[in-house]
Length: 378
Image (cartoon, rainbow, N blue to C red; front, side, top):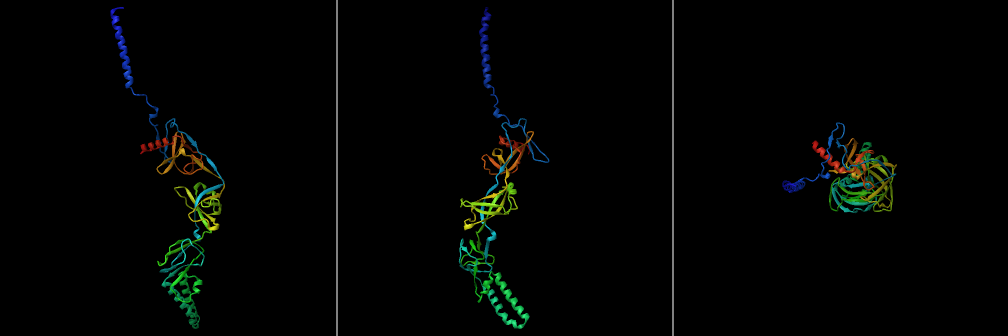
């Protein structure tokens, strides 16, 4: 081996080492491979329809992890159950009002007292009573004196007496009380117009009253109302006259029976519910106003639509669901829901129909894509 060859061999070894060091340095400075989790969101677009709702166009392949569920109706039993609140039957409530200007002299009953029809409840002082009674007594006494004057005088006397009676009637004095008037007095005893319970008391001894002031409210509890709510899609299953059972929370082992008396003509737009008024028998007067009760109505079997809660996204003040209309196009629907007896599901009141394919898996990501597409549109 020549001397030149021996000289170049160690230089070649040094060059190879230098090359390896350069490659190592280059590897340290290069960026790491891209993480698939940091990949940009799918490119989507918004399709505007002149005769329909906007649609979200997903890219080919859709959204990773997105799943769908096809909605189907489930059977409902032949008993419709709801909750309601007990109230007075307003046809069985009477307000006792003052018909004169005066002062309360004596109060004989208090709130929640039971009274009988015709029972004295209050003594009211007013000069109006004395004036009306005096006119009545004068007209009554003038009749015989005018009678000898002939038919015209007799007719005049009768009309005066009738006008005096009418005035006393307008002051709230009953025919029996009118017949018992023998002398004019400024004090008048007011009596209960119906039998029942004093549910409101505004009468205070010594207080002044004016015409139209409510002094008492008397209500009966023999029959009560239970006002309950049913969902809009249950309306076809109920009718006036339908038999029902009510169980109050205060008496869980006792059943009260009644019928549907009225169905509200209006629908609550926020809850999509309709009120029904149930007339319930109340033996023993156990049911009290403002109590809660569970109402069970015998109805024809029906159907309900339920949706997985994973498909629902809450937006500001309403629930939204996303429906696959085909070809990767998604429609946003506003959904009204109600409680359901199966965990993980909600009852659909409006917004979806049987057969709709709703997005369940990755519904939140679809919601974000929808909002991003709408933001780009605006």
